[in-house]
Amino acid sequence: MESKDFYDKLFRIPLFTGMSDDELERVMSHTCFDYQKVREGEVIARQGERCGQLFLLIDGTIEQCAESEGRQYAVTEWINGPTILEQSCVFGVAQRFAHTLRATTSVNLITLEKTELLKLASDSLIFRLNIINLLATALQKHELRLWAHSPASLTDRLARFFLNHVAVPYGHKLFHIKMNDLALLLNDSRLDISRALNVMQSRDLLTLSRGKIDIPHIEALR
Image (cartoon, rainbow, N blue to C red; front, side, top):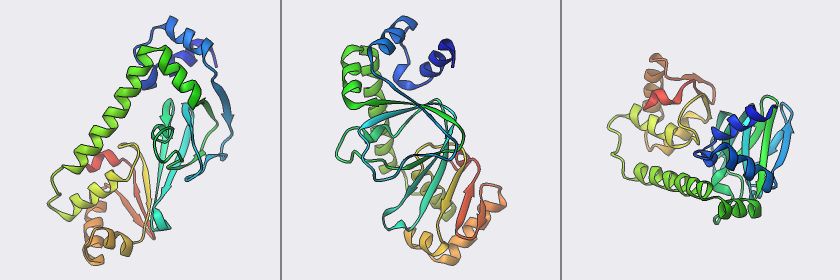
């Protein structure tokens, strides 16, 4: 990958937003980044494994899957680079991967150890402010969801459930869940859930199959 193309991709990652070319070059030369090329189909990390690193997806596509406690249901998403992966798992109480990550194309990754991340945050004001902004934004979005109005209809409740269980609120998602389990989670009857999902399917919002709900563009549920 050419240097200019590589820097352009880094600038699209929120942690480096606002940096000048000179500062980014200085950061890259004084920080120990671990570069990895991952082959298609290779598992990058598994849900529940210890994290402690920051993962930056430079290019390519990964499949990101999370299972609920007890494996009652699972959600699969497809994430394109450049972006940050598992940013909330580096610090805090639960420093473990929240998802299983698998490369669906050949991908280029950068990993940054916690010590290097702290050093970089100490050396660069812009990087430090970007981290604070990312964490504050994530917390604000979480609090807004807690205080949001309760959906009036069952289709709106289903949409809220789907949107609340994805890491990225746009793009293609696949929910692996049985109708009975979804009914229990939403405290409604299986028949009503089935009817509401079929209404959503008739609007081309999702596609139903045995044990799966395929949502091509989850942002359309808002």
